[in-house]
Length: 184
Image (cartoon, rainbow, N blue to C red; front, side, top):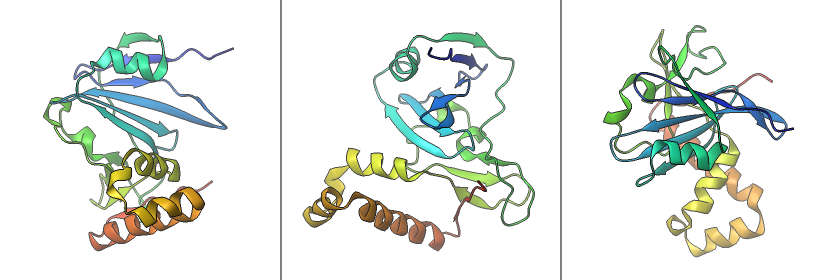
């Protein structure tokens, strides 16, 4: 039996799903009508990004239905935001919130490829992505890679994703942005 997923729609138009089973883990989705389209983000229960898609021409309800099927939508009095389920590695406090939650959805015109999170206590910035998200990015953006890189991806996917992950780590390390680690 498929579990029922409900959506709560906040006054600013953000639509947050209830938690649902995703393989062996739990996940939830957030849908936002932005300045130029609809942003759909799927998170693991910890807050790590599993997938993110931006639809320029699709409406909010169309994207929700495409992503989760027929769901019930209820109005909520407020939007609390996405928080990482881990303490800040810099100050030990938190909460660590998604930076896109700090602006109205209508002002988002070009969402970042890898969204960032920020500790409300000390300001330290983090990213929180799964390797599955890197795989989806690589598959959906094959034009960004050289022929040799694409051959490596088709021969040894795990090694290719590890290399891609190392590139991401280096890029963010130069900006003093850390990857959030989650205790399992």
